[in-house]
Amino acid sequence: MENNKVEVIVVGAGPAGVSAAITLARAGKEVLLIERGDCAGDKNIFGGTIYAKQTAEIFPKFWLTGPIERAITEQKIFLLTDYNSTQFSYKYSSKGAYKAFTVNRAKWDKWCCNQAEKEGAYYAPKTLVKELILKDGKVIGIRTEFEEFYSDIVIIADGVNSLLAKQIGLRKDIKDTDVSLSVKEVIKINKEKLEDRFNVDEEDGCACKILGGPLKDKFALGFMYTNKDTISIGYSISLDEIKKYKIKPYELLDELKAHPTISAYIKDGETIEYSSHLIPEGGYKAIPKLYDNGVMIVGDAAMLVNNVHFEGTNLAMLSGKIAAETAIEAINSKDFSASSLSKYYTKLKESIVIKDLKTHKNTIEIIKKNIHTLSSIYPETACEFIEILTEADGIEKKVKYRKFLKDIIKKGVITSSIPLAILAMEKCLKR
Amino acid sequence: MNINEKLATLKYNKDKESHLAVDNDVCMRCNEKVCTYICPANVYEWNEEKCIMTIRYENCLECGACKIACDKKNIIWRYPNCEYGVKYKNG
Ligand SMILES: Cc1cc2nc3c(=O)[nH]c(=O)nc-3n(C[C@H](O)[C@H](O)[C@H](O)COP(=O)(O)OP(=O)(O)OC[C@H]3O[C@@H](n4cnc5c(N)ncnc54)[C@H](O)[C@@H]3O)c2cc1C
Ligand code: SF4
Ligand code: SF4
Image (tube, rainbow over all chains, first blue to last red; front, side):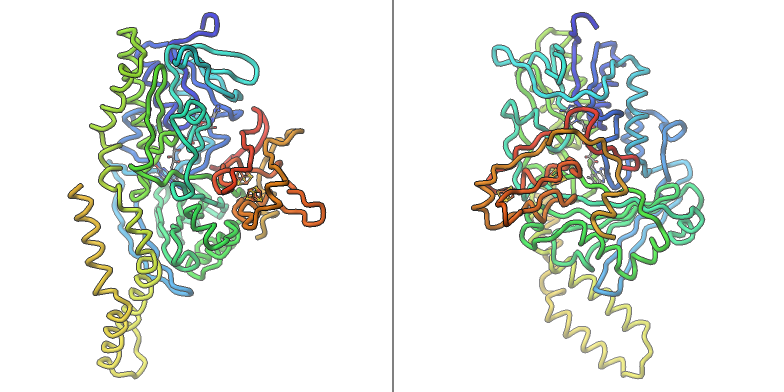
């Protein structure tokens, strides 16, 4: 690197930034990847799972050498009432065709960065980018606490709070309806116990989504993921809902942990880490302008998260890759103008990133409106139904069926929710 | 498990100066005081007697929620300088 100048600077070594940096390095371009943590991953948390197919497009066969925790072989949904629960599970064999893996971000992000470095990217951890340097309406570099670096293009991959996109007016203040807050605990537990409780083989794992119970009537979703010998448990909740209900996030987490169904999974475990992070939730409508003269925004900084399908890391990596490919073309043609970099957005629109977000542009709103049905009435109805099927208590079945039917009609399960769900789907598909 | 026990599981490198600041006069006129409950690390506490906001910045998880939630946009928010702040090991 001569005179602190490279072809591309990438700010932020999360999935979006690393994917951009490695794509550039592989094309022989000079790229500097900057991260504020002592190591990549130090500042990052997620649920969560990375998706095998899309991650392998950047890191082929990463499961052979990368620090994965478990290969997901079961997707489970918990519908909680105040004390009880109904669970749906989809179990499959992972042999030969992995779908998703749990990872620990502190280890995973670090490993990804090492790969980028091995492929030729310059890597500067422990470096906080304070601001972008502008000249004649063009981004020409970045300023850290101690020095300045220059480049033809800066790729902003600094995550959901993106102070840098805000500095140049590409992002405005985030609305509290457009983000959710997550809190999480990592609970250490004996490995055999974990495998027994989640009914998984060695190296296999389970991903759980949790609706209702202490989270009922709030736009909130709980999760549990199995790692090697820890369980990640937490939930995310819209910021406006925290305000509405004046919730202390950590207290609601304790309520979730104490629910009888959930506590059975984590009992005797020791919490070894508490954490918190925001998730972009605004979807298609919250995507800002993603490029300008000498600059592009990728990943969470660009609000590219599909909350309906729990997808973030994959969209971050794909947007990082597409931005890098755009940068490579721009370097080859020596044109770093907004019009040259607008190809990034054109390509993004042709990819699943924008297509899927567009499909779901109204879904979150519809779920929010129907959250009582989804998080209270569905769990109650499911539990009641199974109780009727299985409970022998001397009461005539006809009487029970009648009461059940009367109840669900009264609650509107038949008359509103199911048609509503279908309507929501149809609306999505119409676009 | 209370919040102090939760925070005790974390590794921090404490900076000498705060990366968070508020204007106490604005807080005095704020009825909601959202920051005092929305923060996952319980960083903000209103001192009724002295009419100032106590900010335990050293416990901050750097999530950004307070900055977005404060309707009066009264929180000056930045990341801690490099090498400081929270350091996750199991994210
Ligand atoms: C609780 C939770 C559960 C989730 N579950 C899943 C899941 O199961 N599957 C999934 O695919 N996604 C999940 N996500 C979403 C996923 O984590 C994000 O979409 C993804 O991490 C975004 O990647 P990124 O690179 O854009 O941002 P980040 O991962 O946030 O990375 C940004 C990086 O930039 C650095 N940085 C920021 N500012 C600066 C600066 N000024 N100077 C230098 N460095 C800076 C940060 O330290 C960080 O390393 C979840 C998120 C949360 C919070
Ligand atoms: S919400 Fe904002 S204005 Fe209100 S007390 Fe907190 S910091 Fe002050
Ligand atoms: S950034 Fe998050 S943890 Fe830090 S003070 Fe604000 S709300 Fe609390």
